[in-house]
Length: 200
Image 1 (spheres, one colour):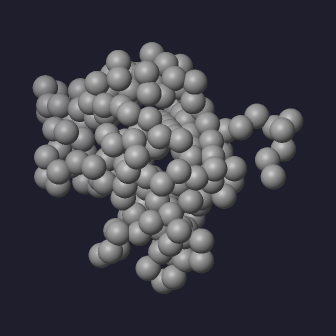
Image 2 (cartoon, helix red, strand yellow):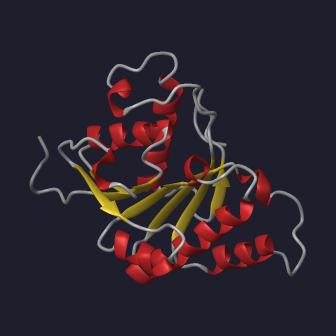
């Protein structure tokens, strides 16, 4: 039972319909966080104690600020919801998150994506260079985490109650990411979570 004297940690998740989204929601509920999944269809996730749903638009900074207002942290799974290879969508989402969280006064942001699109030396007028400048100037305490490999079948929250060999790596990733969210050891950094032991 949740200790009523302890303030509830309020978490927002973009990308709840992915296997990793299910792993994160399962771990957040296990920790008795108040988890809010941002969805286009509010009834597409089964109601559970501690889990809320809210509509929201990831690419609109105003919409993001309205969706995350009053929360303690936001996790966005860009790799789960964006078309592969369409990197303009990825950095547009990141910019909207940075602006939206700053407007709403939400202090913590974790973004999970395949960040290979940020590698290399960007030119001064490239979108990636602009994004890097915005990241460094942002007052939001952000961390970028390299996305783990997704299983071939879609996993649901209940698959993480007693995870099998398919679900266990994502459960480990979710545990490490939520620990990072609370401890904030890698603020303003890109990290790779080693599913066999820690972060790199």
